Every structure is written in C-alpha cells, then in structure tokens.
Image 1 (cartoon, rainbow, N blue to C red):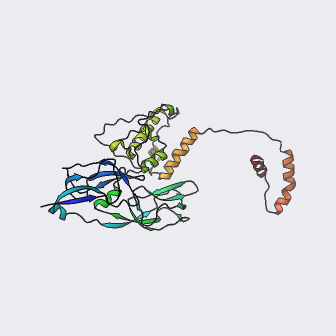
Image 2: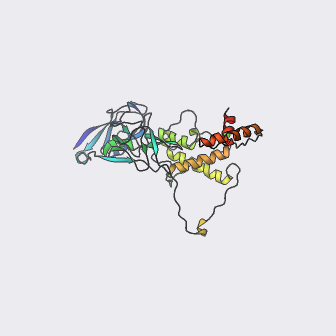
Image 3: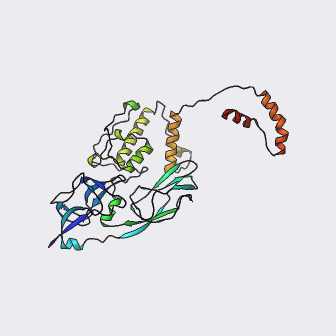
Length: 353
C-alpha cells in the first residue's frame, strides 16, 4: 500500500526567501533518502534540499526561478508503507567550535561577533572576527547548525584551542541541508582530481590587460567562493565555472591558482630565475611541517609586495653643526632627568614637520 506525502522546505533560519536555481527531479523519478530535490540560493549561501524519505515523485510544485521560504511545498511523493516506517527520525547533537591554529599568534582580540544565540549558520559563515598585532581574520563555522551558546564576547583575548561556541547540528533528514553547500573544500585543502574530468585550464597571461575573461557581468558564485577569490586576488570572470548552471565552485578557484603557479614556475616568475631545489637530507635528518594558514598568506603577500612595490632610498645632506652644539649643551640637564639625548629625536622632529 502506498501513501502520498508532501515534502516542504525545512527551516532556513533567518533567510526569508531563497531562489530555486535548480530542480534536480521530475515527476516519475524514483529517489532515495537524502537525494537532492532542489538547489536554493540566498544572499548568504546556496544549499541543496535533500529528500527526507524514499519514494516516487508524483508532482513537482516549484520551478527554477521561484522564490520560496520555510514551509513552502516542494513536491508530492508516493512512498510505500515499508519505506515510510524506515524513515529515520532527525537527531540533534551538540558540537563544540574551537579556535583553529592561529600560527604564532598567542592572543588575538575578538573585535566583532556577527552571530547570536539561536541563529542558524551554514558551513563557512563567519562566527567572529579576531585582530592581532599583525592582521585581522574571520573565523568561519566548521559545520552548519544552530548556535546554542556563545563562549566569548567582544574584547576577549583568545588563542588556539579556545572554545568559541556550541552548535546544535542535525545528523539525519532534511535538516542536514544547510551542511550540503555546493562547495566544501577549505582554501588549504587540495581539490580531488576527477578521473573523467576533461576540462582544460587556461593559463594565466603575464599582462593584466591580456587576461581572458570567460564570462562578463554577474558571476554565479556564493559568498564563501567570493571571499576565497578576494584572498587569492582572483578576478572571478577569468575562472571557468564547472558547477551546475555555470556556478563557480571553490575547486575552480583552486585549479585556476594551480595553473597560475605552474605557469609562473615554468616562466621563472616575472622574469626572475627559479631557485634550485636543494636536497637538505644530505646534511642530516630533516622533518617537514606544514605552515599555518596565516603564515602561508603572510608569505604570499610579503613576497608579492617585495616584487611589486618599488624600493626607494632617499639620500640628502644637512649641516647639523648648531644642532650638535645645542644637543651637547643640553646633555647635562637631560642626564639629571635620566634621559639620553641623541640626534635621533631631532631628526624625527625634522622629518615630521
């Protein structure tokens, strides 16, 4: 005996409306639990809505371009009694979110917390912003869920391993949709190579004016992809998208960067000769350790600026005969106050005035 069941949009958190950018099923399709039904996109993220149970699609109630919200009817499905009884009940569990490796930063100040208790966050959404004496950085959510507790506040000093928040995550059913974002590879991970992939990556030309733009106008990419592109300094219109509906994925950015690095190493990078590869094991035992994310970004930016920013040294001469006479005349008074009077303070005064 079969039963007709309605499949509705699960809780989307603080998203009022989301656009249907893809409908992955049609009437008559036989689908399994967690098979993607539709793909939604809001101003914050994109996500797949999975099927909460297995069955046959009888009628699809949405179409591409529709604007829908929590509770909207997606489709009607016919399920068998045995399948109905096998539907797993959604289970929630609490997970701790800790500060990731900050490199050699001992204490960083929390300068902003863009979320609050009760908010639903997607993977890679910003939880808080840290600032050290070297840089500021956003700490993204490692997984999707609902914020149950915040363990830090603005002004706190935190380090690697500090507990930030406790999230409640759903382990089964439609509530896992928030975790099923289109792209889940972090910047420091390597995108897996597909054996059947035939895409040809276009090399990055040396002249900025010669960059081939694959697309024009608005680029179809989520916030996490755009943030990664800003970190890498990538023009989104120059990257070949491979996602559904010409959507730009993080894997596309990583392939683009690999291609640029390969071309740079072959050409010597800005006309400079490449450094020889040294086998350090010939000098004794060695141990390879990966750099932290902030160290990798720092190395990239410093090296880029060293190559691109002009280095200028200014030389000039000045007659400081009277200055030296005055300084020596004031030395005795300065020593009484415990001050060592050097030419530096006079030079600083002359430079800034």
